[in-house]
Length: 205
Image (cartoon, rainbow, N blue to C red; front, side, top):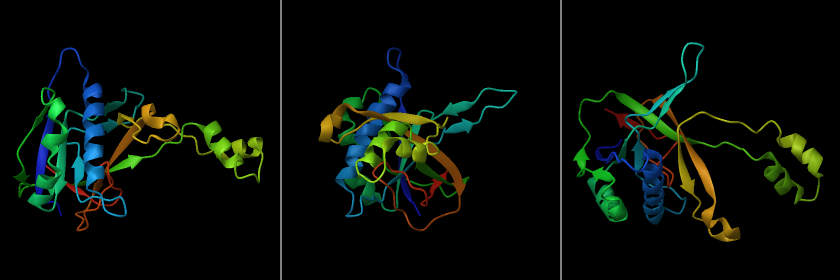
């Protein structure tokens, strides 16, 4: 169970959109978490978006989709957050992001939530070409097999830049879709290098 947290708040800018700041901030956070990952590519620090809103479109109203302007980093020990040293990683963004000191999670909380990555397969032809390389089926058959996995989502997302340098992918951009679900308190605190997890919950307050 997370006992300590740090809160990051995007500072309103006239000339730069919050989406752009989120992209820069989250890329740096991802790099920072990757530095402390274990052999299974997992970390002990999770995130939450306290102002997260996702309401599907209805006949009466448009969809409400927003990550808000706050991010919390959670850890079971104060030393985990101190070791991460997020200020160091966000030095270039100090005019755009306010960072609090490490604090104890309040005793009064609203509940728990899981913030997880939603993978969306968007390019069916690329998937099919990849499958054809195995040499056992043709392109048309591969295309037919993958036609049902292509989905879209209206979930809030952060535009990320791929950090892998193979195949000139260093400039490849992708959307990191984030889904929030209410959850029970979880003892295990294991997260990806995006600070997300489909099982480990973080406190809401």
